[in-house]
Length: 127
Image 1 (cartoon, helix red, strand yellow):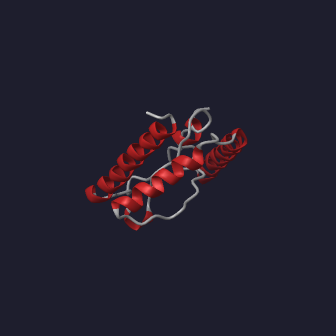
Image 2 (spheres, helix red, strand yellow):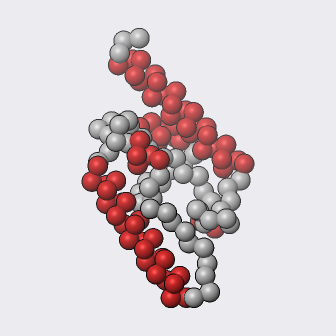
């Protein structure tokens, strides 16, 4: 399905486009939810939380209903997302902004989580 939400002069046509997009999004979310997450997803979530803790950052549990890559990857491999704060809470919009420091903090959490996960796998496999 091609999604084109280019603004139009006719408000009725714009509303119709948005309704089609909303229906598509609901169907996609239902399909992703039905597929279920990888059984080791909780381990990845724990590593992300530990990576944030070790790096000195606060965390908050968030559920994303968007069809991010992690939703697709989680069918075949453990996956979770790391969110960084956006100015005024705006995301998925041209006005979205995160400072270099916030992006670096997210990258630090990811690095720490990957290193910790790798270490735990090595310990589990006796390497």
